[in-house]
Image (cartoon, rainbow, N blue to C red):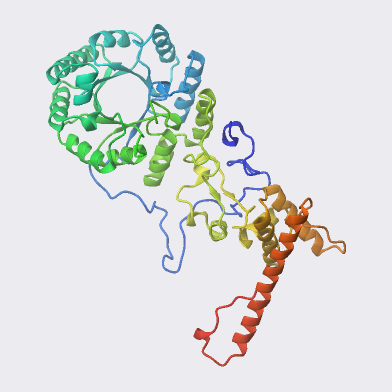
Length: 490
């Protein structure tokens, strides 16, 4: 397992923890708007909040969490009842609106699992996903679920090569199943499968028919992950003008658009989004729960914080990652160990002054911490100063700059770790106050030592050149605007 999964440190420090104070916060209280001369009274409203639209549900969406249905179709997934209960409880603590389960008609164990989860007394509504067939519906309503999600393929591909039924059969069967489920007092959703490769007239016709008999939701499914955000917006917007019921959407990620498609669907008037933890599912999976939260907290932070316990995100992702035996990706939304890591010197300086300069999401909202990566040739003296202060070492700015130059010189010779950088800072500080000078980084090979000395010599030569340029500029009788732009390096 990777560091973000099993609690071991990554790059010397696990994202979300700090052994010497929160790395990178530098005493700031967290995420804040930037006050500048052009913007003396900054608003704390998200700068990328959507334009107001009476059809948009960006600020009132619901999540149908499908890890225990779509996620079971992930190549590595095998969830026994104990695992399913752990996942269901974790999702319920997170605050998802619905938990979707595998069809009880799939196997006898699936039926027993469905019944057991329905008896847990969770706050989330429990749904099961079944074929649009009366026999499946009859099995499902007896398990204790709150609702059924029924589905049938409507594209020419699936009608010809999967179930072999025409649109008249599909429509009549859908109406029969909906009437039966409603008679049992259950919530019912009807969804087409492969919606974006289905004929638009066929889709609107069947959606209109099921809406008239009182279906609670209609569903649009990008089953093969072919849709683009613009296609999604157009279809949902069109459908919104045809039906009065809620609209659920299900997006596969084969072409990398699942999160963007989910967001555009909400903008166009969809009400419910299907997700799974880490996006696991058939092939490349579907809209990931964490990725959707990242997108939505930027759009409406207040709504997300008021509705979902997002500090539980890492816990539920680690749980699922462990159960399906995968690592949480290094660049995973929110919880990847690089998600709030800043490395370049320019970035680090700005982050230390005000985190919102290079972060649109506040890691503290998710119980995470930012990390300023200073063990590289890209580091800047502000990052080294911050780290030295965390280590309790005080120096002048000129000394921080010189120490940074030495770190960059060694990093040009060999890869250095966080512990190496800490050792260099401590040794440099020691040498300032001791007659006995220690080597900055013990253990360098003869070749590395030679390259380091050459790098230091080049740095010293550059420093002397800048000092001479500065002195020449000061003495020259030319306008200031035309003088060489130099900076004295201490």
